[in-house]
Length: 289
Picture 1 (spheres, rainbow, N blue to C red):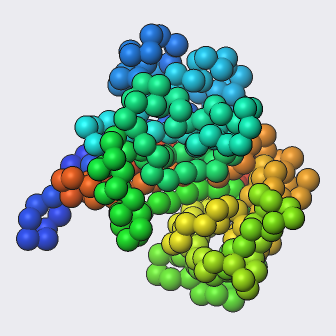
Picture 2 (cartoon, rainbow, N blue to C red):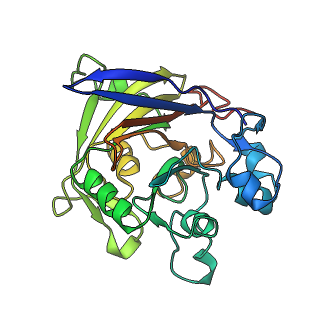
């Protein structure tokens, strides 16, 4: 299956450090070969499928596909989680299938470091062993992990939020404390008693009734990007929790993807930068057919 390119650059900070860029396409699929083969395939010869086509495949085929790391070394794994799959087990026997368990069936030492919402797709990092988990957790706690997402939202936020001037790169900020609405859980709301939360966003493409945006969570609250975009009047297409029925119906899935993940390697300090391409549009059809 096609991965994009890896390129190495040099940073000058007293020492030279390598920066690795790994680019992949939106969804990757290959035939369900044996477990060992599919988990270590280079993917270069695999077939590119749209999200709709991917969802139409058998559960067995999808199971093996999301087990193929985008990056693998002795300390960590970078994986691409599909929409609809839990990151970790939920409550109840019907919520035990998840990315972490599938990965641990092949990499028993793999440990969770962060999560993506069930309906969100994209890049997810796992540690290989307790010490790697401890070091990666520290990177998240000290905000040394850079995450960027793409989403398609209803309306034109650049117009409704024009009172807030963007910075030189086009970014605007949403600040809003987020609180779990206990009576309607798992829904979260903006509330003065919530945890301080900040997101950055900028428009990438504008359509007739929707906008493709890039998002950067400065903090890491549950459902943060979804809640913040809804709070300014621009819920994400396909969002079953935060979008009204007519906006939810515009997409068969939540249109939110973790597109980029960058961090210093926890053991070598080499800068790791992973990015996947998201071929979505602000115009109908929002997903590739």
